[in-house]
Amino acid sequence: MHVSVRLRTALAFVHDVVAAGFAWCAAFWLRLNLEVPEPFFSAMLASLAWVVPLQAAVFWMFGLYRGIWRYASVPDVQRIVLAVLVAAMAVAMVLMLQGRPTGVPRSVLILDPLLLAMAMGGSRMLYRILRERRQARAGGARSVFVLGAGDAAAGLIKEFSLSGEWRVAALFDDNTGRHGRSIHGVKVFGALDTLRDALASMPATHAIIAMPSAGQHDRKRAADLATAAGLQVLTVPSFDDLVSGKVTVSQIRAVELDDLLGRDPVVLDSDGLRGWITGRVVMVTGAGGSIGSELCRQIARFGPRLVVMVESSEFALYQIEQEFSDPAAGTRAHARLCIAAVAGDVRSPVRMAQVMRQYRPTVVLHAAAYKHVPLMETGNCAEAVLNNVGGTWTVARAAIDAGVEKFVLISTDKAVNPTNVMGATKRLAEIVCERLQETTTGTRFVMVRFGNVLGSAGSVIPRFRDQIAAGGPVTVTHPEITRFFMSIPEAAQLVLQAGLMGKGGEIFVLDMGDPVRIADLARSMIRLSGFGEDEIRIVYSGLRPGEKLFEELLADDEATLPTPHHKLRIAQARPGCSDFLDRLALWLAELQSAPAGDGAVKQTLAQFVPEYQPQQVDQEGSRASS
Image 1 (cartoon, rainbow, N blue to C red):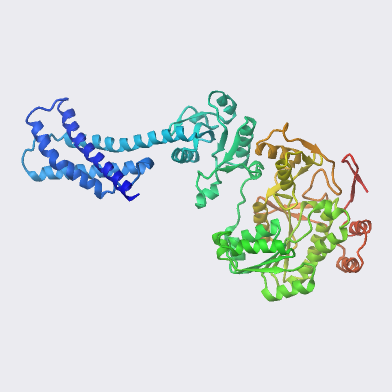
Image 2 (cartoon, rainbow, N blue to C red):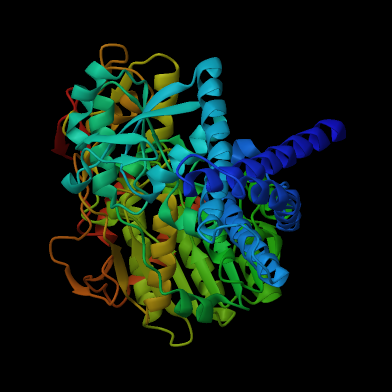
């Protein structure tokens, strides 16, 4: 190893010494019209004996032999040019100090550094180009199209040229001013919609979306065009990840559903959140779930003194505790975070009071709930009420008694004009918090509604993924069913933002964007998995119990008010009756002692939540009021 390194260094040094001698002689030759007569020939040889050693010494001092030729780049050429200029000035100074005619024409002092810089820099770049081409031929580099002709594309071309794994065949960009131009020797073929035309003349197997700073709609369009052309689609990391230094542009990944949703990044009031969270104790219930665990991750960014993770599932609690305790699994923010993993049921007044007294949280984020609509609709209605409503009330009362400053309830769009038990119980939990707000000024209650999150436990995304992996078919309940979707990190960030902004008693509604047809979502997942609909079929199974064709974010008689954050609005909900909490307490006590059947539970739910209209689903998947 050491011998070969020394040998390569010696060869590079000898190359530059020879180049220095060649450049000095060539400068005389060019200056004297391609012929070097006496006495200039003698002067050339006499000066050559000391000029070349002087230049070689300067080159060594500049560290020109620490680099590796195969990785030669612009900084290496810049270092060569600087070394050559310094060497040229040293030669000129020596000639001046001699104080007598030397026979060296002054123009040689200009021609020599030009020729020497070209010889030294050019040979290095030529070596790199030839080596990369040889690697590409030997390694069978995969041909790829790059969508986007900006800085990210330029970075990809440079890094791919070193690895030899990919070969960029062409660039595509909707900016017409770039068409026909080249980046690092790769031509910009045309607009994104010319992908199919390009495939006829330059076959490729993959397309990489290199538009990290573009909006989600633009990236979604690029992904759709590439998949329609039959290409496997990859993408570079997001702009935020690149700027933060967590990843480099060459760390390409498969396009995920988040890239196709057409949603822009969340802009948070980071200073406000730091003031709210930094140095404080934050408690998260349901911390092992999809939303609860992501809330813990987002909270960690703002430096809380302690995060209390409450979870009833031992395995889920173990997983989130390990994520934050294991240095190899967590992030740098995780490593600095103090946590308390608490096993406990939110329905237990004794346990919740004990936890509150022990840790004294400033903020409570209540994410614990039963959320699966069909499971709660049949055979589990009473449990849904006791957990979603009774659990919320239990944690809320413990928070009031412990002097918690702010209680944030994670609600759902299914709480609007609910047609299922899950949605009705979440609306009832909202009303509980609204009524409790009227009884206290010490704790401020904030409720946040949002729709489905991609990849959450029990959502359609993991089910679709499993069905595709099994070869299909993918089951969708109805061809026209739509849902609002957002990513789990986006939902958690907006929950924190709403919690910060809440003054008490508000129901915040998240901007969920446009509704997404589940059938279109299934088709996108099939395409992203590399299949066509002729290979993985979509089968419609009919609406499930309690399921609506579409979800709403606001009830019919609710109005909204704007907030300073463009993705958050405040819903103005109807007030509850004066004896609401007393009647609810009696009902919860009855359910606790003698659980009622589903029919009785739904009837009583309708009394507490007048907008609740239970739905029955027939075999064809249509809905009818019960």
